[in-house]
Length: 198
Image 1 (cartoon, helix red, strand yellow):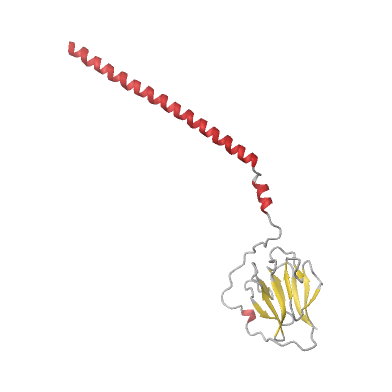
Image 2 (image 1 turned 45 degrees about the horizontal axis):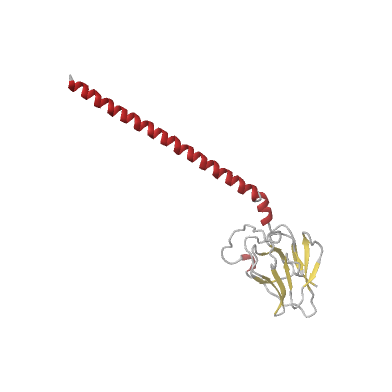
């Protein structure tokens, strides 16, 4: 009978130890959860204080907005040479000819710009000879001038390209103009210029 008392006594001690361990683990978990909750609350309040101190995202984006920046116009990548520019007969200017760019559409409509021997620049910057307000045009977009008795259109490394005769899939880097050519700077649909020779 003594064996039974010893057995049940040891069994009770083991159960009491297991119960004490479970209680201690539960209290430790509750303390850990409370600490995590305090840390989370502190992080949330710090983030709220930081957000209150810094401008909202919309205001930050507005502050970062640069009205003089070129807006990127998505265009397809040209494949091979521009077929519209092949087999063009480049005719030298007659000696008394007056080459001009005439704006036939957009904000500069009906304005005429004579092309001089030194050339004229086109872009959004106010120091250009032709100022374009279209955000797709670069600050210094293109140059038009006389080279070897021909009027040459040269893109100045613009972001969105220079297009000839509505070939909006194939921007030009440099091309000799022929009377009747139409030019778009940065994309189709705004200022359109017609090359004429009088």
